[in-house]
Image 1 (cartoon, rainbow, N blue to C red):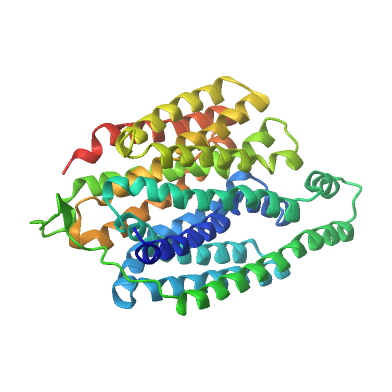
Image 2 (image 1 turned 90 degrees about the horizontal axis):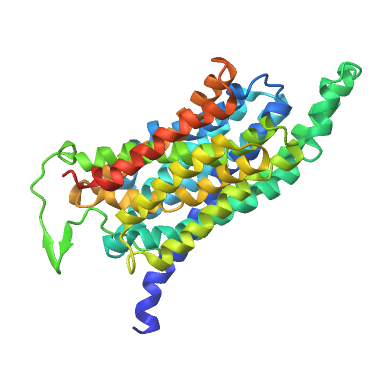
Amino acid sequence: MTNQTKSPVISPIVTIGALFFIFGFVTWANSTLIPFLKLACGLKTDFEAFLVTFASYIAYFFLALPSSWILKKLGFKNGIIIGLLILAFGSLIFIPAASSRSFGLFLTGIFIQGAALSLLQTASNPYISIIGPIESAAKRISIMGLCNKFAGIIVPIIMGTLFLKNASGIEAKINDAATTLAEKEALLAEVLGRVYTPYIALAVVFTAFALFIKYSNLPEVDVDKEEVVDGEEVKSTKTSIFQFPHLFLGAFCIFVYVAAEVMAGDIIGVYGKALGISADISKYFTTLTLTSMLVGYVVGIITIPKYITQQAALKICAILGVIFICAAYVTTGYTSVIFVGLLGLANSLMWPAIFPLGIKGLGKFTKTGSAIMIMGIAGGAIWPLIYGYLKDYAGMHFQLAFFVSVLPCYLYIWFFAAYGHKIK
């Protein structure tokens, strides 16, 4: 193949890869924002702090279908531009939120960012799935995952260093009865002031990338084309989205997968702190989870579909998830944290396998089906609150609460890999 024929394919993949990097950076910033806002806004429980993930992920449930409508009306390229500008606006909301020390305003900014990501994800995932053979879609999404999780690896290091510098010392001073009210106010003002520069910089970057997209040659693709088998286009006889049960089983699989991913990534710092590990150390634990995911993506790129199918990869990952969550429950200290981090390896090939399996064969319903799949991301909103409730209000030991809330996710994913995706 000549370079001239390769470049039209490589260029959009590189652009979508950059988008996936942005998804990862914004999404995995939640792992730092949870302990940061708990400290800066004086939140009393982890349940309150987990509203950060709720605000971020619940946006997908409400905005995925409207995002599909926007993409149909305006096209893929314009949808991405709008999504990036909304993302920049959500980032700027953090500035007045920090000035007023308003947790509610922070949540508003996070929700707006989630809405933008919903539009961007609804556009990007079917695009990268359909740009080549559906059988190798997991491989392409794994490449996108490398971009996403690389961002996730560096976010806790960058944001953790900026936002949670000397967090344990500041928390001790604030809780010290000898610290005056004026001193506490000065400490909190200094902590919240750390928000300004990073989020202004992010808003500038997102706006600049939107301008780049506007003047780029990013092609539109027909994501609603009919399935091709042996070079022949197969026309679907289905007349309703509800005639595809594997789509809804897949959407629920995305729901529990994202729940498990958020528990392993965003909650691992809180989990480590509950084990008695200093916040100055536990703030970096998300990097452990995402490094494990990165390893899994590399394995997926090498093995799918040459050595194993995406269905087989999903089944293996679900089994690993069951093993690692059980191991995390029966161990303590850093060993338990490592097993929670290894859940990243189990989670790595789930999205790349679930998404193409869920939208396979939808034909003209692909845009709507993709939006329904994206709605499943709301699982990341619900599960941390379930965990927080079990731990903070139901009196359950935090390790048991983690085990009880995460194990069912992997069991359902195992079912979908073995049987659910076949139901047509």
